[in-house]
Image 1 (tube, rainbow, N blue to C red):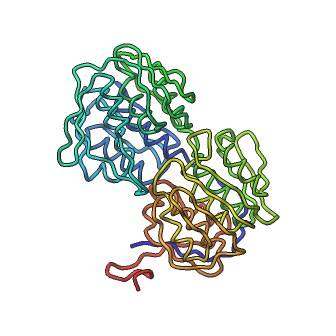
Image 2 (cartoon, rainbow, N blue to C red):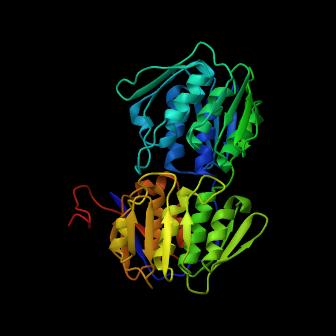
Image 3 (tube, rainbow, N blue to C red):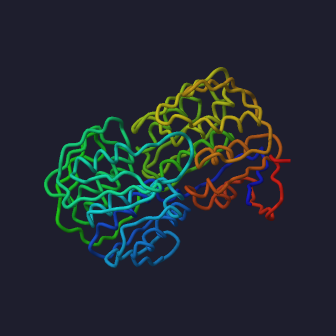
Length: 429
């Protein structure tokens, strides 16, 4: 078992390079299945979810060659199976995207129910609704496997009952080779949806309207190989922006698209943080106390749900009363108990958390309850008085590259330790 040891009280300062976007990478890698040629994907984040997706591609029969830690060549032509088993699918939520890509290429897919972070029920009913509308048949689930088959996918108009990134991605993947035109209404508008569309179009697809709530896809017969570089990760960028604000620091966050960060920037500035934008960078500084603020997560272009735990650390330190409302997931406040261990004054009622700001958190043994909450716990440890031990850090490595290296370069006192098997954790003692 590994854990992070974080000594609080460090002011972060310096420059940080943001990696490629996790959420774009885990959609683009399954899209390679649809190609009839060699694909080179660059600016890949070196994270566990990407490694899991590359393992799935290899298991399916693709030839995968790592060029370096952030670039890979994939030849999907040798694919010889359409089954993604449980032991691979359970490692990440985005394994479900292989349903759409395998269905689009072979007309059949059998994929285990996906894994990923546990913060509430995340059904794939809208995914399956889309496949059915395109002419596929969804078989009754057996042993946790989702099986979808079709003789031929036919374009159709699909209205999503709720804005869903996953359903939008999966329907796009299935529709690019379908006969005729597919229209997705009430589509998700996140930057990684646009990035996926750009990658598909680079291969020869005809996808229009990505970034709006109506996406039109005219099916094509063939997709060629392509070279493509993934966009910067807006959530990693936002995380370091919050870390700068929390520690009263001064960080220049490079390799970003500032427009993707507008909702995060707006809230930080409302809380008294200075944010200066440049062409491909933002500089975040704080010299005054943090002001209370109300935050409500929303689909893009609203405040991202994946930034909710990180902003919560700031709200726990803000003057007065702040209200944090979660509108995307049902149970994303599981990490609040960890903040309470550190002295945070916060009450949760359903999808609403009310914070009474305190001057400073206090170190405690805590755990990463999920990916984004794990990074929030690091930020909390950086500002807390004393030494914080963070367990279950494997969650963090699903979505963040070189965590200790990047924080250490900014002046953080953080290190990884490995406990021998059988040693009780600090929280179990």
